[in-house]
Each structure stands twice: as structure tokens, then as C-alpha cells.
Amino acid sequence: MNRLLVFSLIALTAFMYPLYVLAQETSWEELNVRVTDLFDQERYSEAVNVADNALEVARKTFGPDHPNVALSLDNLAFLYFSQKRYTEAEPYFKEALSLREKVFGPNDPYVALSINNLAGLYREQGRYAEAESYFKRSLSIFEKGLVPDHPDVALLLNNLGELYFSQGKFKEAEPLCRRSLAINEKTLGKEHPDVATDLNNLVELYKAQGKFKEAEPLCKRALAIDEKKLGKDHPGVAIHLITLAGLYREQGKYTEAEPLYRQALSILEKSLGPDHADVTAVMEDMSELYTKMGKKKEAEDMSERARKIRTKKE
Image (cartoon, rainbow, N blue to C red):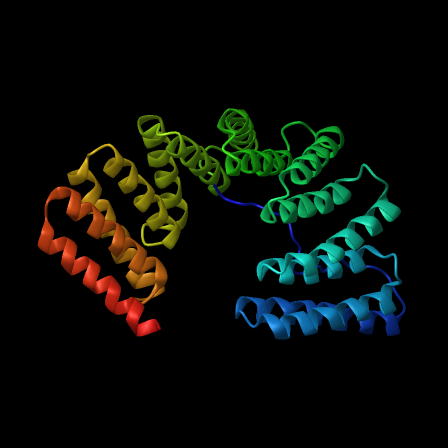
């Protein structure tokens, strides 16, 4: 299932300050942009250094209790989180939560987002009881402070559903995922990319239970949405094709699965490059499919192609 956390990598909130403060604010914004650029380039150590500088600038410019300080704290936490350095991320998320509770009060949506971030962190650490408690608290704040059908409510429902999914609690996860889908269909429209994400989450939920027939129409619908919105050659479309091919393979529909794998492989080779890890993963899936089909030569050829790419990257 897609793991959706709410993080802010760039915070550009405008306030009225004297000119010398505005100059500092510009510096803070520029630092945030630099953090994002470095993150996108996977230059994480440099990004952490710049984010730490941005936090210091935020404290000096806006004061220690300003919401922009919380955003800078979140940025640092997210950088550590993205590197799986969870112990280092936690105190920054906690400080951001404490600051927002002080500024906005305990039941503000911004506080709920901070709680959600901590819940996501605890989930990744396997601290499921704490994660569940925090997700439920965050969801409760959103449901009380926003209209019941707000997209942010859908996001929190999805996150809690993912937590249950990761623990194999499929019965608890399904109604949350279905409610998230219903909200996004109503508020965003039935062909919105977020609806495709919700559909895909339900597909993964059914797959995990071996309910391949129930998953198939949902997967086809998600594929159609993303083909229309993203274009038929987008990597996201390839992911849906791979998922649908896998559903066919699990049902023994090998001839239906093969062209979908080939289409996905072509998309990924063009969009990500012939040596990308996702390309080799599809090749290995195809090798397994050919083995099941009794096509020994095709299976060996595809496996060898994948092996050569992996060897090249070592």
C-alpha cells in the first residue's frame, strides 16, 4: 500500500516584517529551496547541513515559537526519516509538535499533521501501538475540525488503514480504505490521481488476501485513470500494468499477463533507463512467468538480462 505522510519540504509563508527581517526571511526561503534541490539529488548529508542552517535562521528571524520554526524542524526530521535514521528524526518531529501545540492549541489541524508525522515514524520503527494511537488522535482532530469529507481526512484514513495492513489486520484496514476512496471520489472527482492511489491500495489489500478477482477491476480502473491523467508512457502507468499482470499470473492467466509485462518493461526502459532497478525487477517477474508457461529459453534469456544489469551496477 502507498505510505502517505504529510511533510513540508518548502515553506513559503509571507508575513509583514521590517525590511531587515524580510531579508532574513528571503535567506530562509532560499535555504529551503536549496534543501529541496539537494534532497532531489539524493545529497542527503549536504541537505541536512543546509536544513540545520535554515532552522537556525528561522529561530533568529521569526523567534523560537514561530510556525516557520516548526516547518524547519519538520524538514530536518524528514531528511533523517528518508534515510531511515529514525532515532535522529524523532526529537525534531516531537519539538515541531510541541511548538505547534503551544502556538495553535491541541486541536488544530497543523497539530494533527505533526501527530501524523510521528505516527508514521513509529510505524516505520514497528512501534505499532504508539503509531495507532497517534494516527487515531490525528484523525479525530481532523474529523472534528474539518468537514467529514475533507481530503485530509481521507489521507489520515489511508494512513491508519496502511498501519493495519502492515500488521495483517485486513478487516480493520478495508473499511478505512473504502471510506478514503469514497471521500476522494466525492471531493476530487472519480478520475483524480488520488482516487487511483486509493484504488491501488484496495488492490494491494485484496492481493494480500488472495482475492485476485476482486482486485482485478479496481486495478483496471486505476490504470485507466493514470493513463488518462499521466499519459500511457508514464512510470506510474507501468506500475499498474505490473500489478495487473501479477493478478493475472496468480490466477493462471499467463497469456494475459505476458503483454502487460512487456508493455511495462518498455515504458520503464524508456523513462528510467535500461539499467534501472525497476527494469531488472520486471525482467525477473517475466522470467518467473515464462517458467510457469513452460518457456524455458525465454525464462533463461530474461533472467540472464537481469543478471547482467545487476552485475554491471555492482
